[in-house]
Image 1 (cartoon, rainbow, N blue to C red):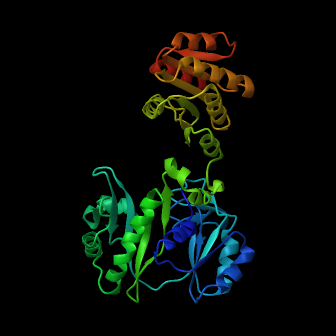
Image 2: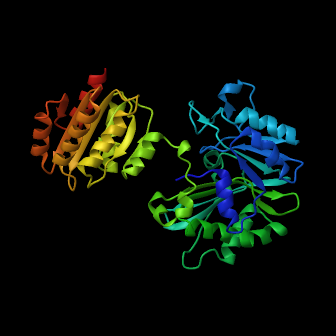
Length: 396
């Protein structure tokens, strides 16, 4: 689960991280009062969407000359003007794709005098099985580009879970940044605080880009991106309350209610599969035969008839879907349960597009009989290759 920048900063502030004062708004009429709560005279007006690259993004409605989704304002009047231009419009960034995201929230923040911009993130380094700091002097940059062009500028510091962040770890991070003076003292408290926030709140990613050294020598979290491990949210009701469903695909929201692993994609062949590996293979073979999957959908190893029916309804609700491929290998999952779920869903929502079903494994003969005797226009397939060819041919 992702949260907005302003929410992430409030979470980090609760652990002692230094952040600027700011006010979140949802209406342009709130901009003037928000700005007047801040010290000024420099303000930053930030679009709040679940995507990176906001500063370099462009608003669809404002034309080619439009400024980005993060803007400096030197007066309260400028804050109001920018708020009116940004709220309700569609921001397109490198991460949103051409469709962009509508800006429903702004964060009006006090400005900062920046001396240096640094990069910091915490994530689980699976190569060593530990939470690690990833740090670089190239703050404000696309970290993937830095990793590709100048990998020597990225330093990883893995943290021993038995000790937490030690003085030696802080010294490594400070040295990697080349910090001195007040900034090194700030690091002594900031880096352990970020680690504590990451571990206690079961975060999957904590990214600060940039972490800045201000002209007075102190550190400040200037931007923050936080995502949480969805499997751990059951023990964090306070974090669950931060969820903004307007930033999520409606189909993915519905899938989460049924505990389905579903990700919407840009293609036109809907997929329902059991098992993440099989789902990836199914998407790959669809691409091999010249088409694109419309989704990743894993119903899991022990899905019920109702869960299968829910997955089918979610897939058919996507207007891009021109055909559906159901690919099930019955191990724990039984083929007859899948067949019953598919038949129930088709009878309820109707079948407007070609449907190809490949079943193999436990109770496969019973599953095939249920499909064949349903009286529905369902095409059976002998194996995955046969299924992929049939669904691709069916949609032309």
